[in-house]
Length: 108
Image 1 (cartoon, rainbow, N blue to C red):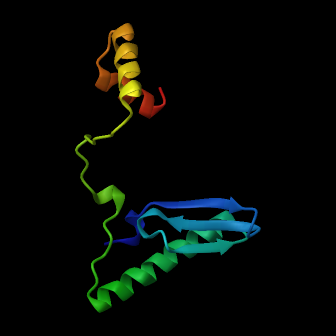
Image 2: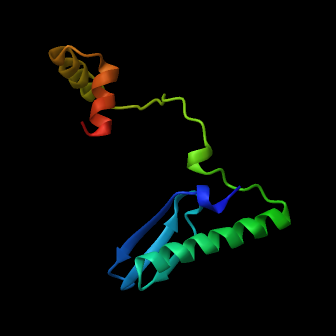
């Protein structure tokens, strides 16, 4: 597994007064820096070191989100009244319930 495939994020932290680099696939890791680019470089370097350690000890490496297969299906449980309202909204818009919920999840 290549460290470049993982999902990195850099955000400002008022609490730490610095930029914090994180990686979604290994949420226990982070890197603080005064500069955004340094935070990204730091977390990427740390991930590469952790992956190397995991390889050496025979641990299973976390699969990057970009390398995973997704079916496009997942089940969500909601209250019956919310289900009813979504069905009504879909009927009023003349679209399937699936399409309505997909659009709303996508923010469109």
